Image (cartoon, rainbow, N blue to C red; front, side, top):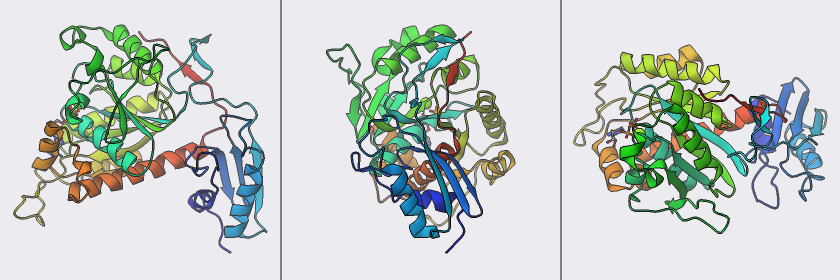
Length: 372
Ligand SMILES: Nc1ncnc2c1ncn2[C@@H]1O[C@H](COP(=O)(O)OP(=O)(O)O)[C@@H](O)[C@H]1O
Ligand SMILES: [Mg+2]
């Protein structure tokens, strides 16, 4: 029998499936505070509902799954967390109860950020969302880029007006299996551009908290470009699981990406990975040629320096821009090479999220600092 490693333990626990949702416990984010040592495994089972029918049986099912892979000599210590604090519950602003929070029912909130505008942040956020939905996850995408919302165009839903249900909660618009919401649906663009920081933050908070997302595995957030006060405050408003940084290969862009990573570190949000966009150009008639127009290997070096995964390198291709303008994200073309790169990026992201979740403490309080 092999010795357990962090990822082989997670793989074994992926075989334990909650009969109610049909999803495995790693995917559900139930495995927390995982510690793996030679001959022993320890973790906390974290359930958002202690009366869940599988709650009583889950520890034994986990032990069994680990014994099947690593043998019965492995010492397994499972503790269930009785203080079931869900994502988004028990939020406080400056130590005072902040009431309902946007995270209820949402397993992972992931921000997509960039140091600069125009590097492909919305393109990555949109395609990532569709790609995760294609893999069977329940996905939402919220565009809080109040100054330049582009999700309505990229999904071809510019004319959509989200409805409100009988409880006065906003119902997202659905397209390609993704629940969408954009500031662009609700806010007059002419007015939004003169909003100041605190207005943006309170609008974002209300926007997320008043939306009927239902159960989501992932909520992807398209942030405004940059690393200023507005971005920092939004990031602190929402209980994020992690962030993806998009950069182009130029040195100036990488310098800004580095600032993005520093911003998330400052608020203790893990950076799950870097995506290099417009990494190279391949002419359609010479698809095997790669021209590194903006320099080669910059994002890879940055990822190594910062010790975060490089999730993928996306080529500069006309079809990405055309599909974005047509409202059909490129991943909807499952045959395209770029679609395949996106599939690889989203798989890497899922792995990175699950590994981060498994080391997180089961019970955590999310402290929100009041915006400026
Ligand atoms: N890899 C790419 N190849 C070709 N065009 C791209 C690529 N990535 C983004 N674009 C285009 O560049 C423009 C800016 O991208 P966008 O995602 O809106 O950037 P951001 O959200 O960072 O401002 C859009 O027109 C988009 O279609
Ligand atoms: Mg954008």
